[in-house]
Amino acid sequence: GWVAMSPDGKNIVWSVADNIRLPVRWVICSRDGGETFQKAAVFDFVGQPITDGFLKVFSDRVHSHLFYGFDEKGCFFVSHDGGATYRKKRALLPEADFGLIDCANKTEVRGVAGISGVFYMALGNHGMWKLTYTEDTDTVTAKKLSAPGDTCLRLGLGLGVPGGDYVSCSKAIYLCGVIGGAYGFYRTFDEGKTYARLNREDQMYGQINSIDGDKRTFGRFYLATGSRGLIYGEKEE
View 1: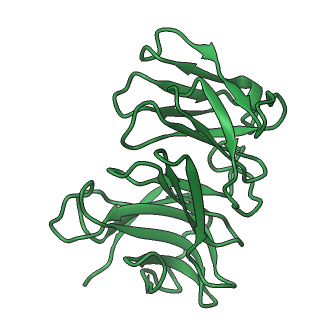
View 2 (view 1 turned 90 degrees about the horizontal axis):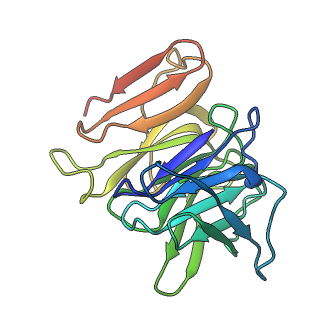
């Protein structure tokens, strides 16, 4: 299945898989580092329990009591109690299926280290999106970052400043997709306003299951391929 862990390591939420799906009724949580688990509860806008559908969970990157969930229709959920209960929020995301295990899932969600409630998302033909949850006001904003017609199939974050610190400095976004009509691997430092292509036409490597940037080495990124193993690349400056 799929597991999310709080920054302090005490709260664990496990979306137990049914084949390649992550049923909402099988989401369980632990508040003692995995010693014991209980069933999580998921509710809609008006407080009615949700028992059908699917849910993929993510932890906040700063606060251990905050967890999040995305379902098979692109809906967004928030937990304030370490992943024990979730409530549906109005996020205005495009309809995308998050309720699958990795590789089967054609979306990719990355939380931003050092910042609470910020996620970048690869949503296929819907492009690249940024979601921000603000706990103080209990509000959600979602913004499309890519241009019309561009696709974002996979997405990851890396060190954005040479010699900098990954947590405190701005991040580089690495993506696999179609930008300006050309498929390839790209990097952006300004949330999709400008891109640098990182590969040549003879460097495609087949199916790409995931992409991510290195957190310590500026300019290095990694590709999880379907048949050629793990590949890394470095863009000469």
